[in-house]
Image (cartoon, rainbow, N blue to C red):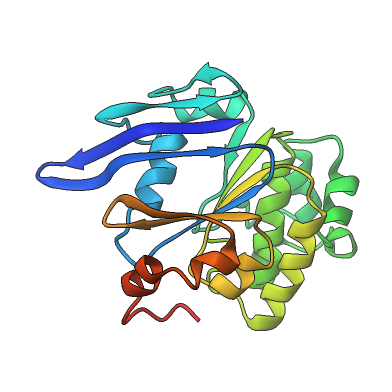
Length: 222
């Protein structure tokens, strides 16, 4: 469904991504790695906000390398951001009504139907994150790219969001620092370090891999 093939991205002398390759075939993939590993740069390249120096990105058999973010989203590859992007002055339902006629179904899916008349700016951080995901789903994506969906959330909010995401049938690729929460959701993980893929496989195998453990020494990833 999504294939990243030999992607390299440089910023001057800095090699942020070094020949990165992996495939996503209709399930949930986590992308992890210590700070500075290249995770956000990878998402920016996949979603069209940055152009790679070399390599290709394929989505549903089509080459999307270097296309505009809006064009990639139109093709069904939709991204969320770590910084929440909702209309804070509008109610929850008004946010959804801008982009979808199915606001009730989406708000029920993310557990916000009972709060549909609340101004979005008055939601908790966790509720606002759910609204952002509902807005992404309103675009009827074929795949979601979720950028640190658990960032800034309390343990209770994280647990609630996990249950929401488990009910979402759309294939996902997630970047996340909170590995416990991520491992509850994904089938496979790709581990980046210094812009290179050092591991690809099941989450339970990643935590036992010597290269992954070495990459995380000194990092707070519990």
